[in-house]
Image (tube, rainbow, N blue to C red):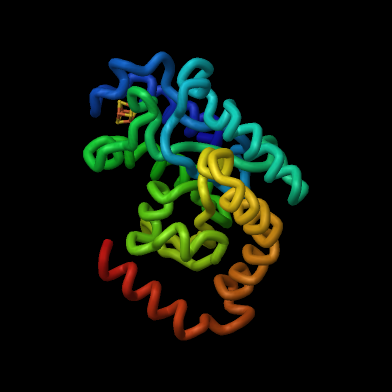
Length: 214
Ligand code: SF4
């Protein structure tokens, strides 16, 4: 099957999913959307009010900021894929529970496997810890790493969530700066993944530490 068909199968599974209670209070499932051949997948936390109403990820105010950030580096939604950790909205936008994230994990994992992106960019701390369990968003934002996830190496860059940037000017400035640096960060790590330059010792240590915790 082609990537588009495989992703539509994931969409169908999400629409029929009853693995956690969130489907009961949500209006629509929000599986994800964008380019099936994307080199970068952006992963947020969970659908908000507007996303729940329309079934589209990042379509409210935070999504408009994400569009401006993408535009600042010559990208738009047609070139990337955007998804969330949770596929149904938690009531009143509360934080996702550990049980909900575990129940929903297989859908995002399938999307990542099908799209097979070069880089994973997480937005906010919940999606960051999926790939970098001991990361701290205030210290690690914008700093790219190579992570091994489900048997494959990915370029991984944690970022602040655009919704946090809308609430605080300092976070907004930092997020914009991190986006501007992202293309160079991806190029730098791509050279390491492809063996063009040696992996710095520190990064190997981080990888081993992380693998030991999975
Ligand atoms: S949030 Fe995820 S696990 Fe929960 S019902 Fe929706 S698709 Fe299923």
